[in-house]
Image (cartoon, rainbow, N blue to C red):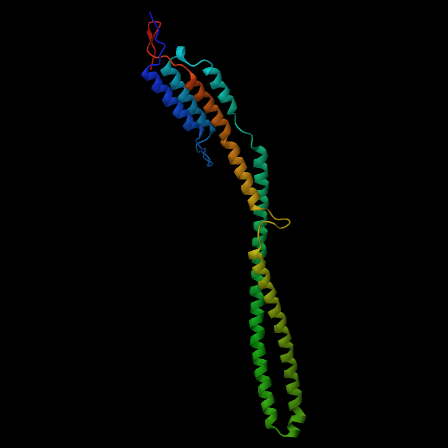
Length: 251
């Protein structure tokens, strides 16, 4: 019986297809969504590919060191411990939620105070308008009375109305100032950035940690090195195809 040392076309095709598939696997991206494409599915695909390669090439024609390279590749792909990152993300998430809750409560309180102040403002404005009308009428009436009429009752009446108008004007000014300050506080709260202030959570930090976690879970470099090592081993090997020792090599 004679062996054929040169590579047969079928074995060459199997080798080429396997190398291309390994390259694709080495650059696949995991899904960040729960239940998406992950390390377990990727490892299953790698094992299926290599099982198919072994079956088609045959155990006697596997490249030297192939099994060890396969084991070494799978050793690189152990699940990543992200518990520290998870704890940080969860902590910052709770802080962000608490800050959002406090901000909402503060906004609701300011809006409530503004509504109450506006009611008082409107009521005071109407009352002031009424009292000003009474004062104007009283002053007109005084002008129409003689000197003794004004002396007996007109002056006292107008003085009382002037005093009341003055009180209402001062009260209205206080209310107007309060409304203005409350509106300013509300506007400041709406424009308040979440980052860069003491005691606030920086959303950019959460995004950075999530990105770091996602990148860590990708095992991108490890997967690329693992598949590349096997692909290079296959590419360097002299795959035998055809009849060896009188037996047909499965393809």
